Image (cartoon, helix red, strand yellow):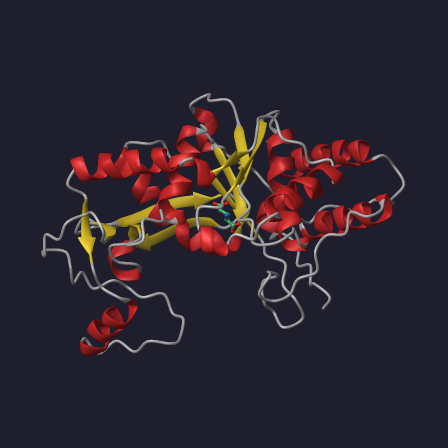
Length: 320
Ligand code: GLU
């Protein structure tokens, strides 16, 4: 499978970035937050490189956070493989990496805060029951489609313990934000998502909550990640508002797709980045740079020189 490498859109390439988070004069802090479901492939390397370059181009800090909160999907050893791949590619981090699996108490504290504000409720709906309720309302559902929660358990006053926990959205919940590449975005969370789950019935904290708590506690000012996560951003901003957190700046990078137009992932059997030789590392870095709309330079120079060159190019293209 040969990955396609569509470049960044011209609007972003010409780039006049107003970094909203920078207006508050907070020092730039970025992060790369891989889920350890397998080693890095070209798509995740491009995300890592894009966020690293953006941080370096702003003279900012770059953190790595292993998002192993969804423990059933976590592959043992994948975290170390990813860290080794980042090191081999010269993408070094500034603070000790964090593992979400060790931060449960922090997420629980946020749940408690939301309980105190009366913003969450217990829910016992299974996916099948939600599908049934939606079908009764005449909604047709495609397989694997994300379901808009119809609010079945909202007024049931179920206990929070031993049930899934959902956030209660306000009546008007239109969220707007500016993505640094894709421009103005709006989402009506009631129409497009419904009250969403923060903690599952088995006690697992969901990605939405964990990512918001961590980005806040780690004082992340700039989130640079793949475009597949764009549709999560409104939910995350709503959670930031509910918890009294600041909203960082967002930049969603284009996805690398395979010949069938699918996002590279473990499911689509993406090839892991080969770090067995310096030649293979440089090829991977150049492929990732090409995907980000940067020039590919002859391999052969030192990786740190190459990264400095790309940082300069990134700064000239995207930052004013
Ligand atoms: N862990 C997520 C992933 O690997 C990324 C989350 C984020 O960057 O917000 O897709």
